[in-house]
Length: 426
Image (cartoon, rainbow, N blue to C red; front, side, top):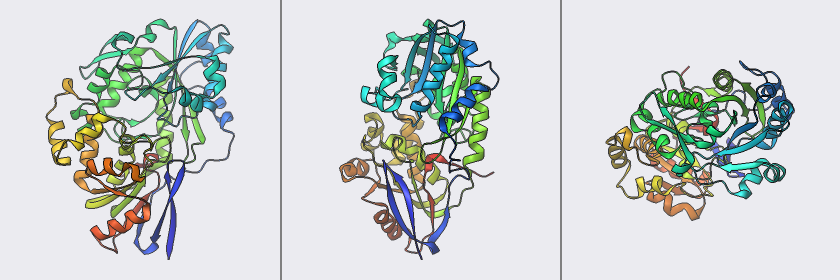
């Protein structure tokens, strides 16, 4: 019997038709579906019962200048739902607060006005003072000390001009930071590019603790925690979202305690055991996370955990933004294959970490284990092939191509949303 599965792809779906006899597993988080509860109510409940902290309105009473950090266009943070009650809570405590919303772009390209409106809504964009972080503007940075790992900590200088630092975000598995959210709003969110590069060095990325769902002994997480403390981050609002990008949980309060509670909640919802097969099919959860190859590496790590050595990974991503970074692309396009990429990256010391080498390092690791067939539009075929992967126009074609490589009766593990699960042994 043929089973039809929907794989997120941009704002639509790829349909995968697969004989049930070949299915090794379909890995979805146990808590994938939302409860149908009111999303705004979930957020307000979290703000009203903060973890390890007074309410935000209390913190705001003595703060004339407030900095609110939020994610950029590459993250599906539902800011239209989260930002209004966050601002309302601040102004309940300090009606005359001078609020600046800082867009935490990390080392991504600047968020456009259109993307800000799509994220925050026209009313907030028109009414609030918004600054887009630029990691490459040295004049806009201030020195905050030395990271535990030895790197220099440079962060957005607006931190020096504020009385209260607040951040909103969302928590999901992160392929080398353990989980997103919390301290990531600071590093890499509003850090200088030299600081981000050091934090993402080859030795850290290679650590067995720098994996999805792993915080303890994770060297990347350790530096991020320190950065958040030095930045004076006082309060966070982080949400959990389901496959439809709906809010299904929220935590607020102390940046460390609330984040750890949210990570535990996330881990319970999305942890799955690996089921290794000849072929692993996955996605990056659709828009906005599948806008480029760079981001898609995250979803590919879930497939990496479920494909046998020498098997095939089928990645589905719309790639409306192409490769996601010329430097990242060049790591592959300028080399003979993933072996050469890995060799060159492993020779680079931490203080000389090059732009986007961390993403290239992880993709090279994946491609050294399995071949990759990338499902995306024909306009992206050349770049996919230049990066030593195989292009396919749709999921069924990719499956047929994979069958030719590993056998028509090969077993298949399907992970519909690769960034929405933590694949690891319990």
